[in-house]
Image (cartoon, rainbow over all chains, first blue to last red; front, side, top):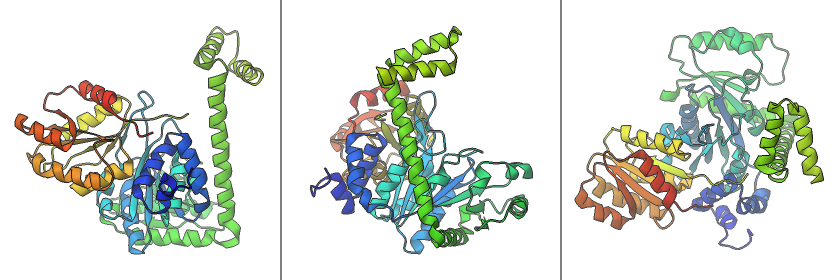
Length: 317
Length: 136
């Protein structure tokens, strides 16, 4: 697979966007076709720059993604966008609405936007996000923007997936203790204070500055960029800040270290997923799981001993 | 776990700004377990075709209230086909205010189902589930 000139991977390398989008569906569904395509294409990856956009719902991730994509195009960069929205925990359905703020991008054939649902993943991204990014990378996109779901405090997976993480904040989200908490505030390589025309934007920027001044010495000082996303104001400065951070990463083997970290994380995540799938499929299936739930409900087992029993059934069965 | 989700593009071509119907359908399909890509109002044929291409949807649903369906739908279909999104593989349906006498022309274009005012959203979801062809 992958060698025939009309195969999907060969067509993707030839710049066929239909092949790109079809293969995204395959990797997202976890099919054999998708895996074989990644195998065929992986040697062509590792060239794109990746920028993550995260922040709470309504902070302006899609709006800024739209403007940043246009700014990058003005700098002659081709752009891929992966936009993630949540799946329903009840029906597994999803409304993927990020394109609403990106409508004007469809006129530019050098921009490719793909919407993904989280499908049960909890870290702010979809499980297939890295595979979809790899396809855009192999396709030859210069920069890939990754927009997370609306992130609260702990959706920090993006920091491992993207080279540069932009945390988008807006006025009115709480007091300065919020900025001191662990989690999402710590992963920002660039702070973007959006809705800069609203009262309170000054306060957010001042709080961030204060936060950064009391931390320990770091080799990269995250810049604070003020924007009015809906008007495109400040977007050139944001593109510059991302470029500066990339230049910083290029020094002292930091890019390589970050890549090793990302790949290590992906291998661990895939292994976790496969082991769990194997457990559910091979150790008594869903019924086996329910039998364990029964035992814990009846207090004859703890959740811990239930897992012991489950795993030993798998490894010995 | 390999899973094939039904992905649906819900789009509103033309100049009317009334997207309540499209949103109700999008929400109902979400509740039926589908992934709905919603693109907003005032979409040109090129924008709809680009979204269908990039998102590799199994289903395209168009909502129109302006009466311009016989002008816009052929162009949308043409733009989609140019990008390799064809009614052979992708299920096209539409809804909105569409007179009875226009139905044969739309079916001829490749629209498999047409849901008018008062259509039950459960019927729309059931129709899609029954007729969709999975790409994976």
